[in-house]
Length: 151
Image 1 (cartoon, rainbow, N blue to C red):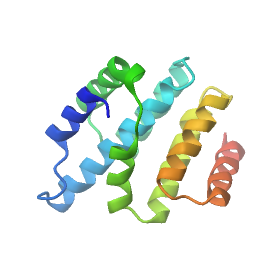
Image 2 (image 1 turned 60 degrees about the vertical axis):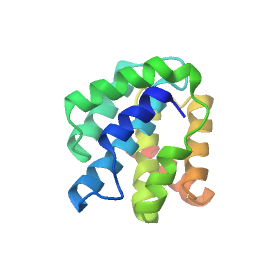
Image 3 (image 1 turned 180 degrees about the vertical axis):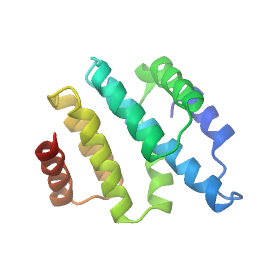
Image 4 (image 1 turned 135 degrees about the horizontal axis):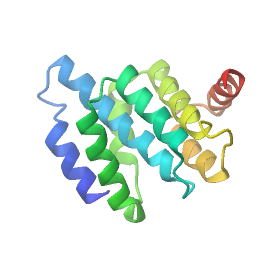
């Protein structure tokens, strides 16, 4: 996995001995990493995508601006070395049920569509994350259609 992001997670995520509030925040950080990766997946980081991620992270997940900025920098620094999302998705899988996983997929669709178009790289990344979260293809498509209808 990404070395710097892994160190960040070791610093902020300690699920096994954490209380419920810490666990929720740790899971939100894992979601943040997946969302931030989405903004760079098509090699075009748009302000609209960044704004959408910031909105989701701050308003819906309670991630602080400092944590967001650190995650953004780590994601940017290590993007070329990214080969595996299992660390993030396994954390999500072990603590979330399907309704929460579907919400994450919707967040990803929101980010992918923030600039008004969904690049094939974005859709591929989203499918990969959905597969790792064991989200059925029908639910993956429903989430996409829901976001496209709203946007």
